[in-house]
View (cartoon, one colour):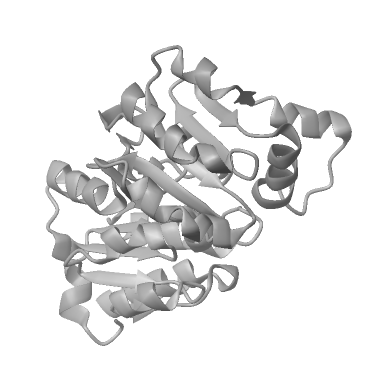
Length: 292
C-alpha cells in the first residue's frame, strides 16, 4: 500500500466495519483510531461505517468518539447520511419474518431470535437464555449493579412469536443467537431455504437475516453511486463473514483485519493488524503515508 502512490491517491473514501474492526475489544473507538479518522478528514477523504448494528447501536460509540459519518447499517438493510437521516431501507415483510420464525421453531428452547425493527428490538426466547447470552456476549466484562443490568435488558421487548406477528412492524433484520455454535452452523440451510433473504454472520454465534437486496456489499455499492465514487476510489476494512460481500467488490483497497477468518483474508488484498492492535489505524496511516 505504501509503495503504490498513484493507487493510494485515487482513494476518496474509507469504509469500515465496526465490531472486530473499527471498535476495540471493549466495543469502543481507540484514541489511535480517532486520530486516524481525523487524519482522513484533514486529507479531504470521507469516512463511513458499514455495520451489522442498528443505527442507534452504532451511533453510541461513534458519538462518544466525536465522530459523525454516513452509515450502512444492519448489513445494508438501511443507509443513513451523516445527520442520521435514512436515505434507503429494505424491510422484511411480515410473511418473511413468519417463515423465518417457523424455520427455527424446532429449536425455540435453545435459540434466541432478535428482531430489529423501527420500534426497537424484540426478543423471542426463554428469559434465562436471553439474559445469560446478552450478559456474557453483548455486554461483557462490565461491572454493573442489578439496577443497571435491568435497565439494559429493559431496552429489549420480550414477546411470543404470535404476539410479534400479530402486528405489522417494519423489521429490518432477524438474528438467530446461541452459544452453541454447532446449532448455529446447523440451521443455516433452514435460513436460506426461506428464500428471498440474505444470510450472513458477524460472529460464529449468530446468523443475521435481511432482505435479499440488503448486504454490506449492496449497501456500499449504493452509497458509492449516490456519492459519485468509483469502487477504485474506496478502501474498505472488515473482519467477519458479513463483510465478504463488501470486500469482494473491485475496490481500490480491500483490507482484512488480523483477527478475520481465513476465508475473508483470502478475499482481501491486504491484511492489517487485529482490532485490539488498532489495525484500522495501521491501515489508514499506511494509506496516508503512501499518498505523500
